[in-house]
Image (cartoon, rainbow, N blue to C red; front, top):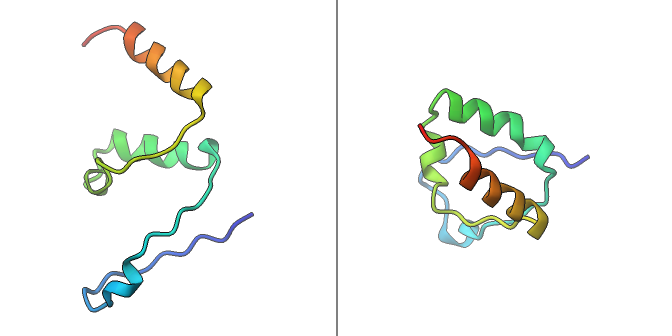
Length: 73
């Protein structure tokens, strides 16, 4: 299991450290956190709204079909 690192941003870090590292995680490891953050409308979700993620083609197909078939509000 990978150890996760959290850092406190103070605004004093050099731009050389701003290179984002990609990590691989299982959907099951983050789904509860994302569900909870969405349910409680956590502001930090907006910070990542335009970030791109990679998903497998079969998961993309399922999500696309779900979005087309789910009942409208």
